[in-house]
Length: 362
Image 1 (cartoon, rainbow, N blue to C red):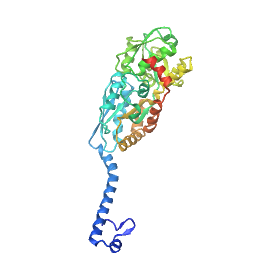
Image 2 (image 1 turned 45 degrees about the vertical axis):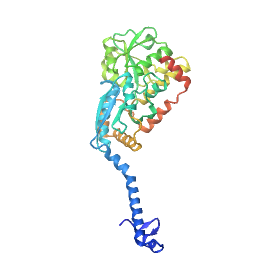
Image 3 (image 1 turned 135 degrees about the horizontal axis):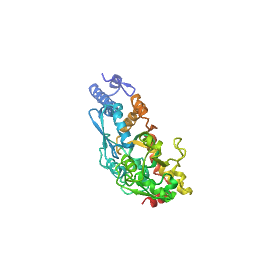
Image 4 (image 1 turned 90 degrees about the vertical axis):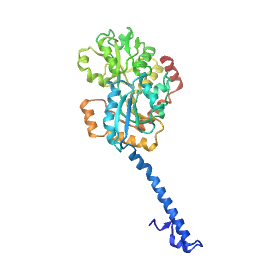
């Protein structure tokens, strides 16, 4: 019943052409067949186990920022749709874990979160940059996270509210301009410091804001003059204010000007030196990481593939695409493999550039 051959030799012939008793030959054949069957089962068991692993389970998606901002939106969007494409259809629960520009969540995911695929994260887009810069509070290795996929790249901008005296980047070179920061390591703190050193601006960083939404509200009320947010969030939520000139965009954090903002300088334009342009461009590359989903290090390779396949299916899901289209949000997805390579490349920036940036950001 287990097949009639071991190798290429028929079992009956083997029993007649050797001096072994027939019973012993059949016993050996039975053992070999059972071993082969066991090996086959072992070969398929990981695939079956991966398919069954998430059944009845809950995944916690840790969002490293407060509710209301872009990271929170994209994290919750993914939480609604990703489980649909994971075998076993686990429930995905978004959980905000703000603090230190998402370092709290990043360090938790790296060291303390379950490493079985039941913990995921949405973290700052400058995760790899801050590691390369040896920013205080970094206790992770960005390339050791398992990058599951990017929902979108992000164009971030610095804005000023209606009570700010500075209305252009040239004004900000002459007038001290208080701006909201969500913490050390966040772009809302690092960009102003870099622009002050390399572009001659006079931004004053005011820390203590849990997220970009709160920073923008503070700029609107006059608690601070300016804040950082994504261009998409700004144009969706402050359309009238932009039209009236109550909100003004000072700078866009990209390597070149976006078609929507032809009169707003890209951050790389603010420095008059090649070294300064390279440093600003290096930091602006964080926009390519954008709003990505990561998993802790140490996951089985099969489970990483399963999560990446589910992510790739999610960003093609007609219901998911309909919601993205309805809300007109930024949507430039990228695979987990692409993101893994991108993050690894960021970690290979030249020591000279890193040293200069470190000096500015310390």
